[in-house]
Image (tube, rainbow, N blue to C red; front, side, top):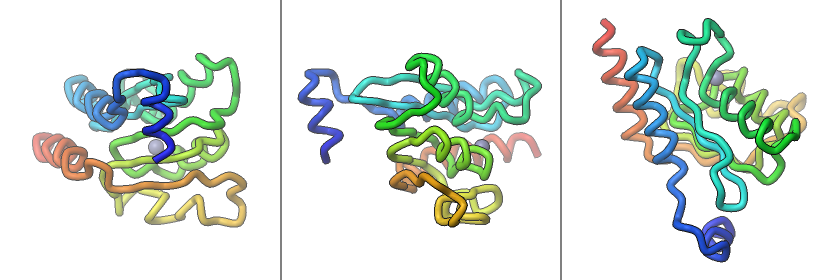
Amino acid sequence: MAKRESIEDAGETRLDPMGLALAEARAATARGEVPVGAAIVKNGAVLATAGNAPLARHDPTAHAEMLAIRAACATLNDERLSGCDLYVTLEPCAMCAAAISFARIRRLYFGAYDPKGGAVEHGPRFFTQATCHHAPEVYGGIRESEARELLRVFFRERR
Ligand code: ZN
């Protein structure tokens, strides 16, 4: 639990990055977007949070992870996020898994598993491929039921 120690060492309030990601997912729901949210943390500080926004931005790449990575890179003035951890409420798709790899994210924490569109534990299993040159440590199922419930309600109300 080196991460928790570093947060306590920094004397900061204990962070709840997945809670922030879930809040972004709820905000996405309110905008009519698929409820997925993300947060990026480094050394106990939140660098970026973002919610899914392809509809609002007219941009199919505007997934929560992509927006959070862009914002964190802008904050750090760096194209890499070495030592950063990404929290996202849903298993990343292939595009986001690639971006996470290119960004050199240290650890990936995700909420709900996504058998249909996920690319970490499902489908291409991006990080296990020989052509993937940086794989984060992966922790799935973090606050899974909350993340899954947001998606379930969203899609039920759209049908
Ligand atoms: Zn994605």
